[in-house]
Length: 229
Length: 229
DNA sequence: CCAGATGATGTGTGATCACAATTGTCGGCC
DNA sequence: GGCCGACAATTGTGATCACACATCATCTGG
Image 1 (cartoon, rainbow over the protein chains, first blue to last red):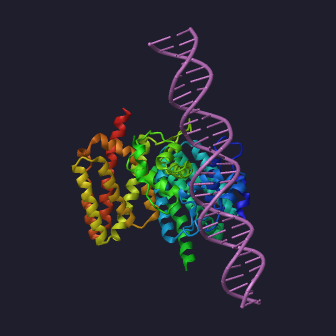
Image 2 (spheres, rainbow over the protein chains, first blue to last red):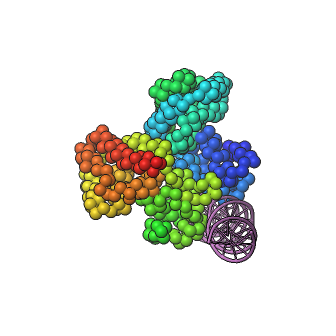
Image 3 (cartoon, chains in turn orange, purple, green, yellow):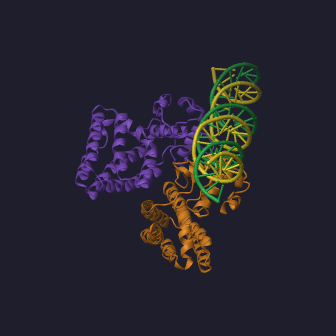
């Protein structure tokens, strides 16, 4: 079970507070889809896996609940990784299709040659994972690529919105991509994006990012419709 | 000091958990601008004012920090109501100008005659507050009006995004509007909005909401520029 | 052999205590 | 009279305990 490997997500020797470290660990695990939707978790179990008392876990989890990355089931009040309804996934797609192209446009005009180089590297490791059929590696690299872009925009509010949206899509995305296999994964628009960044062309960057996201989310929307039937 | 009246925000006799009640109380107080930006607060003080132990307050506050409605100062790690930079306010304006018209458009096609009646009533109380020069009453009524619309959209994700954005703008809005007085407050587009709802016209509703928000946020942007000088 | 009651376990929630760090406040000194 | 240092109060963080409730296992009675 995935939960056991959690402690590897803990940043070691950090001077940040425990609940921040726990939050980071859980957030990363969630966006990378370590937890499948519907997975139930518990404070004490997580605390045990992370070698901390339940206290910091409570605060980290409270924050994740606020970001809809976790939920308390109304019936038993027990903790769980949320499943996505078709309606909610549709809203997520719309929201992502607005914020993330916006971030790409902002980042493009501020792009530096260094950033372009970093993006090329990230995209290389992504392609390697793809060719090896490594879904986990693909998701990790894809996440790294996108957020390298978003960080470069220096737009905190939008950045956090994107982060929250990925937090919600992560678990479901992992399930879908696992089922599809890397062969059917969307041919991403990262090359167009890198080109737009090199040229500092905001509108091309915006459009490339929009297409990248829409294709990915379309896959998930199809999957959720299929699952409903 | 505003903090003292906090207990009136607590929903009495509710069977919800304490931290939820505390959260609701603080959230409402923040969106209505009871706390000025920069105001420092403390867990034990809030707990005392709300007649609960510090424990539920910690969880409520943790959630509000996640939503950027409160912040921990990096230096002291002490709790504070955040101030808005011009850049952040700009992002808030952009985000609100996207989500809230979206919500209005969705709600418009689902509009019922009952909703239209409710909106008319809310708008009446808003106008009364305006004519009396009652800034607090205006903000309360305006908040109620908008979220009556957003609730009708039945789009949870967008709704929560709007809620979070209001949470962040609330404290600053109160300061600005207090300085301006109700005379200079933006002539809202609520009548157009109500008309669009009666006709179930999504695009007119979207445009009216967009203009409503942009005018309000423009006032705040001017204020923040003035304050910077 | 199976169904229903009963105890054991695990759950989130809240209270209380301990601790290190920061802030605020007095008193005394120059 | 104004500044500085020691002491007291307050802060957020974490750990531990208690409790009500839900879930699950076991055992008993038919």
